[in-house]
Image (cartoon, rainbow, N blue to C red):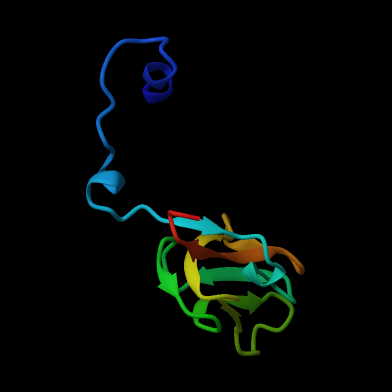
Length: 111
C-alpha cells in the first residue's frame, strides 16, 4: 500500500515500519564471492546462528553433517566476510556445492 500512496495512486500517509522507527534496518550487499559459503559435502545443515545476526569473517554460522561419513566431525560453515547473515540453507538436506550461508556486507546508508 505504501508504494501506491507514494506514487499517487491512493491517498493516505505512510507510517514508518518498525525497522525504520527503531533504526535497526540495515543496507547490505552480497556481491563478492566471499559472501557465499558453499558446502563441500552433501548432508544435513544445522544452523548455529539466526539470520540477521551480525558476524565476523570466519565465525561459525552452521554445521554440515556428512551423509556419507556419519562418524566424521561436522563441516563448519563460516561467514566469509564481516557483516550480517542474510540467508542460510532453506532445508536441512543440502547438496555438495550448495550455498548454505550468505553473509552481506553492511553498507552506510549514505552510499
